[in-house]
Length: 192
Picture 1: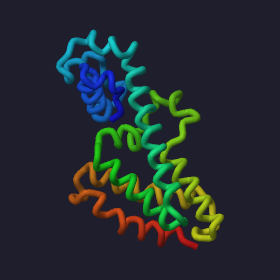
Picture 2: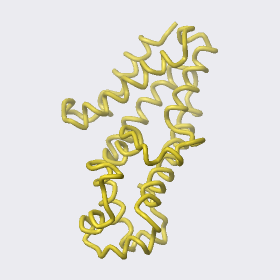
Picture 3: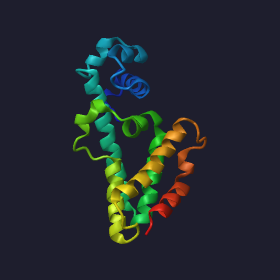
């Protein structure tokens, strides 16, 4: 989770961690500022020192972290050569991100927040990175020449579902241990 250096020794990190857990468990609309304050062990006024509202907090938590994650993905994929290596890098990065902070990952990529629709408009996200990867793979002749969204659904659906199964403990081992095998399976489904 990204927190400004100047705010790391304030109450903000605890507030954001509490808010994140509640947003994941109860949704943004289902969470109140009182809930967040109680979970963080602070007075409700402490939240308002950093944000004007719960919605502003939820939006910034989402936007800042999603932008960082997407930029990291773009950087990692730019260093990989060819569709197969890029796909491997994508799956490995997604799984590492999940394992590093499952709640944040869930908040960014699994939960569908109708409350954040405005923030999401025009925001580049990991789905766009995968879509670009598939288009480039088709241009390279590595992936099937079919509708991009069909290939996207196969690839993203597999990665996304692995994260959900891990969250519900239906997959016991860390996803990072399954990245190579998952990449091979997706590659087999997408290749020309």
